[in-house]
Image 1 (cartoon, rainbow, N blue to C red):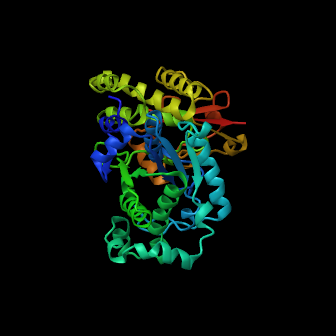
Image 2 (image 1 turned 90 degrees about the vertical axis):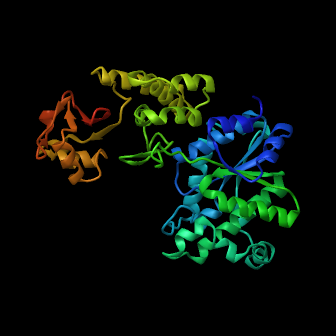
Length: 408
């Protein structure tokens, strides 16, 4: 199987295409330049973006040229797709900082050397646009009636859609046109929630340049129940080790539901499909071997082999009753914080193990909190310096979530 389209389809990436047979033939016979957009609304990508990165990497490995488009211009407006409220407005300086951070993360999977891939920022052409010229050259090709039927707009109409956001589809469509003119880009890839915007861009290229363009969406990362994966007690599962430690990242994949293991192996690793099928067929306690492979491989791709090994060793040593310093999530406090003591519920919430004192109380009452492997039943417990051993205190939430508190 040499055609990357078949590889992507077998691994479960492809959700929708505009011209399936044409795209398959094109990817087999030509070297295609394609693009995926990344919204710089945060200074790190999260696991939801990782599928797009893998999508790009598979295409590049097959000889096609990726354009990673950072939305420095469109972020000034905000994408209404998948939103029920207006996005927070960011400054130009914050957007530029976020874009620089995203570039470094993309380079973990995409080779930008010697023109093998292109890094572009739509701020380069959007910020200097003349609005009247833009309306005449781009706006005239869009039907408002048709735009209002797009899913990204329909869900916002009841609560209110700003004219600012209404321009987003035009701007993203114009991105495709510019990339087509500048780099010969003929295909846009992206998450399935971007389908309406991608179609708009493809049609703009056809109307303005009389050229054929294509769009192909990737499945979103969801669990067996259809819910988005990548949410933790602290929020999103970030690719930045300062936001989500390599150990926490490893543990997330080590603890996925049995029914999601094979899907994650297909989408988030480069392991050959025949090996994935063997791992996915494991049952009972044996499925844990597949989870360990998944956790190790995904962590290695994002954080490197050294961090993946450290996280793997830390997980094994913890389950064996021996904590390995430096590899599990930890928080340092000045010892004065514990001179008079701090309530256990407040500490759990401050550490991010629970979202509120109320949740912490319920967790303790249900037997879900351990200190140094001893179950705690008293929600009113006060943690003092006396509870620490060599200035360290290990707290466990449930069976698998560890956090070490250190005092200095």
